[in-house]
Picture 1 (cartoon, rainbow, N blue to C red):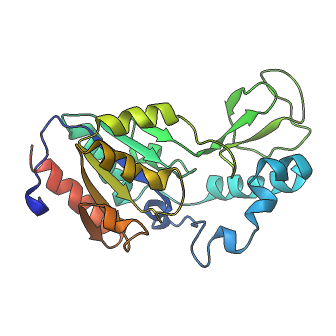
Picture 2 (picture 1 turned 135 degrees about the horizontal axis):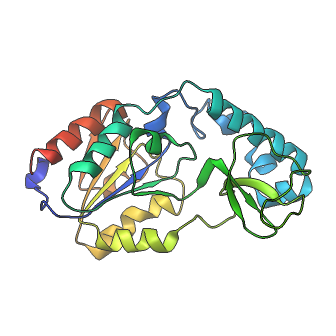
Picture 3 (picture 1 turned 180 degrees about the horizontal axis):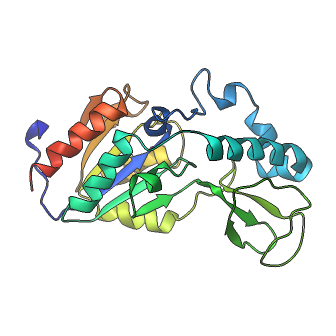
Length: 244
């Protein structure tokens, strides 16, 4: 491995993924110049305040997003499948933390997965917090299977101003990791962009950025590999597995 780094065979690997890993499967990103937030104001569709003020518009936006994901021909790409292969073959624990709300990691075979920003394929009730798998449209008329009330069903995604999911589990994984990989992230969305600083402060992990181009926090990593995710991720995984 570069920089004379050879991981222990039973070391813990934590992997953070962002939109860049799914872009090569044909899914839109949010923050690119032609991404979703260049076409729709996030303040209008992706905040608790927007949902309280105009739930119809919020539901319309997410109904459209859910339908695109449902009918899309997007399949897990070589990067998703490489991470699943790493999880299956590595002797230590591999934890994937994704900011993505698609289900491509699951489709690619990853099992130890944390969706810190939720997922399009689920819905949640604001009244009772009941979570359920969901594929169709939602509206203010939709009844919750848990409490039976209408008006509270919403996408199970983390909106701006809300706390990401499973932060306790994420913190525990970061504390125990020996190798931290950041894949396809812009480095400007917190708290995920701060994970590298958490790992650095603990001081036990080697850190690697695998990205199309250097992120905003690229200088914080011990190592960087740059290029399409479908190239750099399988290549890096192959190098790791060759150390077994």
